[in-house]
Length: 444
Image (cartoon, rainbow, N blue to C red; front, side, top):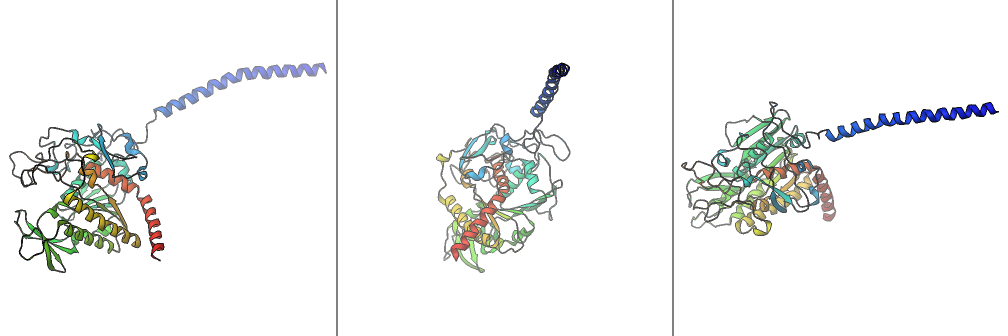
């Protein structure tokens, strides 16, 4: 019995001794492993697609521009607020490309080339009330639109936005010109690595139009608009596109003659005896009604139709051909400027026709989306070329350009909105289904 107790006592001592030796060894093994794991985690870079330190072009060369700020890769949170109500806030990290790094900039918007002395107009971003609008992330955009296509339809301001998009995307890849024609009004660009195509269909009035008089009462030409006939140069081409961006505006300020069913029904400032003078908004509303109807009638168009609302000009001290200019150096605050006059009339005409088209689209399973930039861009009188779109000794038609936008400049933010809208399409489509269901129940 005593021998057994002695053996048990000796065994307990041996186990205690083994544990005293093993425990420190275990600690010495685990702690370095956990420490190494922690250090590795702290040092590991974030995925390139989220917060890239640089962007690489198709030739595998590092671009000199800085990457977007971190908020450019936040998940979509903007559904919690109105994207288009907010303020312009300083963005010292901008711009994200330069006039020397992007070849797509039209000469008349190349403000830095032609000697614009200030650069602060490139260092603002849009801050919606109550949420963030992410800065454009080119890699994220490419991943979303891989294998798809986008068409801009409108005037030279629409082309201005297309060029902005090409410049923003140039930090990752440059496109190839795959245009079907040499006409600069109809361009197509293709990104091979992402099988993505951008197109531009120039259609200044969106409807069938012709120049009736090269001079007209104001010396700027007088155009005849067939308000009930769409411009088929774009309307017959949209079936192949996943996204189309519709816009128009400044050409409607010219003297116009209005036709319906092939007959003259009136005009806008044509100064022709016995011809009824309609407002500018009359023709504008009818043109968008016809454009939306044409989209609704395309049975094979399965894409998303965006309306980019009217972008007001900022002439001060006179109209465009009578010494008007845009010399302000910073944005307005939302409390400092309101939409009014003819700009308000055009905006409301657009909005009214869009709402009708959107409702009809829901019934047919078509998607219409609003990119409501009018108030946002009304607050940016500082972003136009003014006289910095040409050399001082050059003779140009629009000497002080307060219609188009410098690149880089405020128009880059339009593509921030575009990316956010594309990212949110799944949510918007579900909302469409709910609204359509409610509308059907109410109509019974």
